Amino acid sequence: MTARVLVVDDLLPNIKLLEARLTAEYFDVLTSTNGPEAIEVCKAGLCDIVLLDVMMPGMDGFEVCQRLKTDPATSHIPVVMVTALDQAADRVRGLDCGADDFLTKPVDEVALIARVRSLSRLKVTLDELRSRAAASARIGRSDPFVNASAADGHRGRVLLVDDRPASSDRIVASLRGEQSVDVEANPQEALFRAAEHPYDLVIVSLGLANYDGLRLCSQLRSLERTRSLPLLTIADLDDRAKILRGLDLGVNDYLVRPIDRNELVARVRTQVRRKRYADSLRDNVEQAIEMAVVDALTGLHNRRYFDMNLTGLLDRAAQEAKPLSLLVLDIDFFKKVNDTHGHDAGDEILRALAARMRRAVRSVDMVCRLGGEEFVIVMPDTAIDIAAKVAERVRRSVEAEPFTVKEGQVAIPVTISIGIADRGFDANPDFLFKSADKALYESKSSGRNRVTLAAAA
Image (spheres, rainbow, N blue to C red):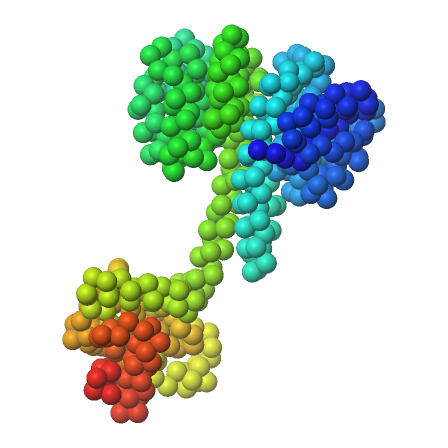
């Protein structure tokens, strides 16, 4: 997978070296010699990954990283800090600034390419989520990127897969107070637990006694329910080949024993924060999709949802040779209600009517608000005579009890008129709807507060 990589270093020989290595692997390389310029490149959306030197005059790499990660416009861009500093404290400081990884000079070429490819995959996923979230903002939702960037990496739920009690005890002790950790020694049981519980991170030891830890990572990546779950592996010093293979399989990060406590805490916090960032974007997209097909006032599906799904329901009924009935209903004299009691009272009645309809029909029936005071109920696997009985039940439930509005101070009697049509031999959605609508018109012209079948109309 290719990507646009921004190399930031104040020394031209270092830039040229990284540029040559990355270009040989078909990455597009941009360069910058100072922090402010690099920030502007990122804000312009010109790069996918940043390889950032720490020791630069003026604004050092730590400050650049912190600024990128605190700006909602750039916080999603992966940052790898590349430096001659090799102490654990330096790595922790970089991770605390928001860096996604920390590579020590001289940079191992294989490790560099593996890490860039891994982060490229992450960036593609985040870009897709951000694109969808941006679309949701255009329909009136709050800024999804500000909300997502506010996510922190504390108090996450972590699953640790390690069959060595001494090792797992040290990790649990290191994360105590920061994260909630569950330990599982059995890899197969860990797979089930990860799929069944809302974990924020899975830590997998590559030193499992009777199981290949990378196999478990692969299985977690292949399952739909765990595909986006961050993975962090723990390896021994001589497990370099496994570490690189893990990055190719989709592992997000790794630690090498002996584990520095502060680095463990920082890397786990980074992964938890990243997952919450992605989850926030996904939630925003799902809510936007729901807004597009749900009527905001009543909570019922809207006209768009009805139009999108009626054809499919009719086709399925035709294939299975099963009946399908459609009810169109309308509140009688609703304009008079609005004129007399106000639109707020009318809105209360619409919400209450939606609730009564839901209670009167099955969960498999599709109840939609078409607009104004007009509603439709689609009843799969239901013949017209049965649908007529349900329609009568709905009509009686509305007529039997007045609708209380204005905090119970006013009771307004309401009735509805209903028209019904069934699929018959024609699976044309327009014909079916028009037949039911014609029957509704007949109900209204015949005195209202009644049910009329399309055949009788």
